[in-house]
Length: 357
Figure 1 (cartoon, rainbow, N blue to C red):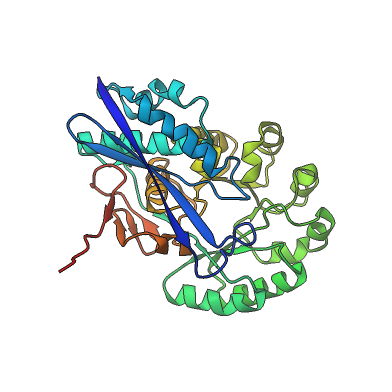
Figure 2 (tube, rainbow, N blue to C red):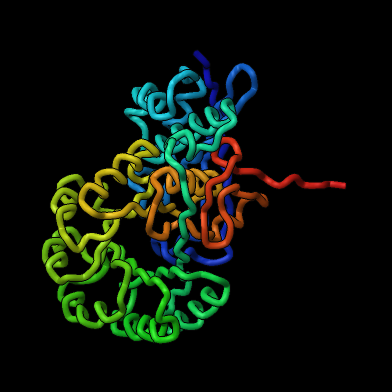
């Protein structure tokens, strides 16, 4: 058995401008880093960074949960498989926030990967992993800017584009998407409404949305209108709804459901993400692993989960402005618009050394 002792660090900073694609007005991002270290000095890291206005837990709740580990080290059996180890430590995590559970599970498996010299995705899956692609989120809030932004992304090799809709006029947003589709007929386009569209408006623009040949529309309406939205024949994806068991059970059998957008820090960690990926596939919906504008530790862990489940759809793992608040770093599996299998231990995160000379 090994005892893993915890250290908690809180870091963050101010963004140059409000974060587009997140709850309105966010100009600061704070990240909680959990480090677990054994008696031999082998360490693993995890991250708990709830997104204000979106995550079901708060930063204070995550910090409070993780600080309990400082006084009560985690005992693990290094001979267990990764999943058995997570099951063994589940009791430690029962009362934690979802983001804290994600941090704990990531740190445990990063430690296990460091101890065994294996990448996290290989700990979770014995099958041959293959590269997964990444969808690029367009960070322009004004739809009139979308065609130019899309041109730049495609010119930079991005083939999968995501747009946030529902914040303004859906007419203007659809017109902008039509321009993007005309310019890039082979691009994969998905949109996310964060439940902001009235059902009547969604129904009114149904034909125009179908003509865009979207990969899917993520969370178009509030839960009360899900059944009606599911009858329109539009390709759909669940995200926030995954937090609500009753609503999820209602929508999972819908034949128009294409994907489950799974955010490990929101749904309760790596174990929960793996379970949801399996449930979705049982109903014909593919997993899309995504972040909530977290730091590189969470992003690296999400990439490892995407590799482990052998995701077939482009994943929500693109870079974003919050990463600029961190020191320069490399993620072993990330290159351009793909995440690829690699041989770097644990989550594959390396911070660049700073030369003070």
